[in-house]
Amino acid sequence: MSETTAVAGAEEHRAGWFELFFDLVFVVTVSVLAHGLHGDPDAADFGTFVVLFFPAWWAWVNLMVTVNVFGSARPGVQAMLLCAMPALGLMAAAAPQGLGDRAWAYALGAAWVRVMFFVIWFDRARRSEDPLPIWRPVGYGLVPALLWAVSAAVPGAGRFVLWGVAIVLEVVLLAVRTGLTEEFYGRLSTEHLVERIGLFVVIVLGESVFTVVATLADHFTAASGGAALAGFVVVAELAMIFFVWGTAHAAAGLDRAQAGGSTRAIRDTVMYLPFVLIAGITVIAAALGTAVAEPDHHLPSGSCWALCGGVLAFYTANAAIALRYGDGGRVVLRWYGPCVVLTLGALLPAALLLPAWAAVACAAAVVFVLAKISRLRRFRIRGLLPGS
Image 1 (tube, rainbow, N blue to C red):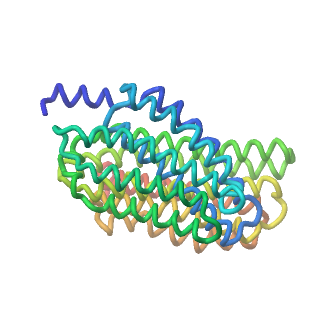
Image 2: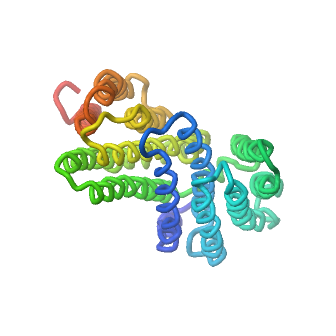
């Protein structure tokens, strides 16, 4: 591929306005699912969140990769995104009872999305000049779509068994590289992948800010204001960590993985691990909303685990991504180790023992310190500070 062609391809695969419009539906999806974690969520609530959020994320990331491969300017791709939006909206609307009375609607939405990207990939596979085997879009898109659709009519636990089979089938087929060669991964636009995942993180961070501000509007007291300010610091520091250092590291890591033919690293850091990071931010937002609503009371145990677990999930996902990009274990441990120590040794006791506003203030302090540690470690690695 010539340098001119590569530059042209990079420009073509920048996120377009139609993709940004498509992402609007996820603002609602994240908001609805996060609402179920407010107050004192128990293990069943966290499990419900994961079960309902992962299919929505999985649908989004598959549509994102499809746009990456084909380009957002293609009319067929724009039609796919437009037709997929009502399906994702249906999943969001069904989410409050997604494992109950509205499970059938959630399943139909999931089936609908898969049909959308199946059509695009099947059209690509049936062209004789394209090496993609037809069984891949059939097995990865059409068969799971049928399983989701059939599950809408299956009562009881059988419905959720079909959901699990559909997801497992997609995950397994993604791990099978037959038909997805290094040449295929080499055609991906890493700039577009980083940009799109970053925009999804913006959506989730925006939900965090909205939760804090909207809750403060309903509980307009000095204590709630203090909790809201500390919550904003938490969100702002997480955003800085991700966008100032994380995205640049991701872009360089994806480029290295692509140049070295490390297809598994691309798959893991685009499809799987960002879900853990995004889920972590979402549960933090729910805990912050609870704290702002009742700042003078102790956080319920469920919100304590959401706050601490969310911070750990955010940093654990970043650590795993760094390892997949080739960072050494000792390098990663220098900033991930303090995260585990401070979260479990300082933040968790504070969340359990102190009033909610103080617990969030402690979370802000912990995240602030971790941000500074990450910054210093990165500067030392780059030789910008003495002792590197």
